[in-house]
Length: 117
Image (cartoon, rainbow, N blue to C red; front, side, top):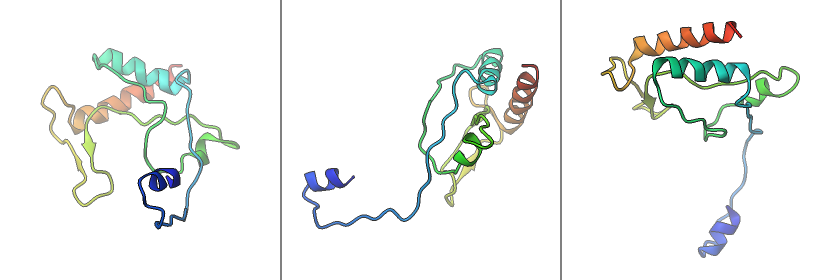
């Protein structure tokens, strides 16, 4: 960030890191991830795997030792603007976007698919 600011003539701006934590990452080969992808295929949903995504949650507490658990952020449905006053979640799906009921069913399917591995 410092180089970017300097390159654009903002040498007078100071930045300080006030907090932070390390990233976390889960292999696509983990059974939890594969169970999720299997359920998506079963539901006919085209998937894209994002190995990294922007966000702020301290998942390293779970994905690194001593726990070393896999983390998968998934489920059908749609929401957005997380943690803002206008955060939303689609309640009633329209056949193209899953609603709350379909999202809940997808979570159950994912848990069962994971348990079968």
